[in-house]
Image (cartoon, rainbow, N blue to C red; front, side, top):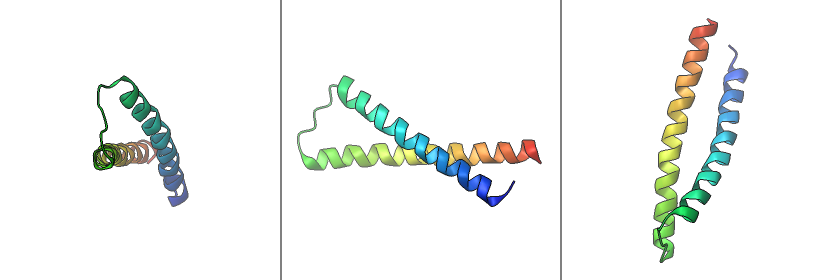
Amino acid sequence: MSSNTITLIFCLGGLTFLFNWVFFLRLYFKNSAVQITDRFQLIKTFLVHLIISTIGVLTMGVLFVSALMISHG
């Protein structure tokens, strides 16, 4: 597989990540009893969700590309 194909896979994964992240954050704040009382708490919640999501996306991207390269030689 060429480098451009792998880059395209990661870009599509990034777009999927952004869509899912916005969707699930809306559900989280809409259906959760969490009350954001100040700006620091909002930023902290945002960063925690961002870090967890980023680690998950990078891990799944590496696993996906590895499996794709193994199956296609």
